[in-house]
Image (cartoon, rainbow, N blue to C red):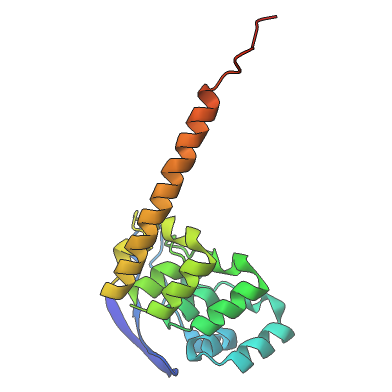
Length: 186
């Protein structure tokens, strides 16, 4: 279900709807995200880099602060397609992009679900492991992608990462089955 929310206009997008999480056994009904209650989230949604840097300088914990539903500034920036904010967050601390919300979704889930191709590209280049993370209902970012371009990017990365994982597992199996030629039982 969707509910209208306050509009915050940015250069690339407008935040106009808030999507409720599915009932995932979280107990109480998830709260609505109110972006205007947290200045860093507003700056990230608008892509106001000057404001983001200023707030980060004054309040270093602002990027890791959890909002309603467990969202962080990274979730907001990804959902709004603010790739510069995501690049800045990565340069400050990569861990800020690895955070999941109460539904188990990471910033890439929101970028993909909203068709934010530039944000998807930044997240895939900087933190490719996000594409393999499934949320609590088992969906990965690729399965949430609405935009055809986002879906293709994620599917290509999924193929590459799957091949790499399979090759790594094969090498590990080969190493564990290998015995030295001159090994003796002493």
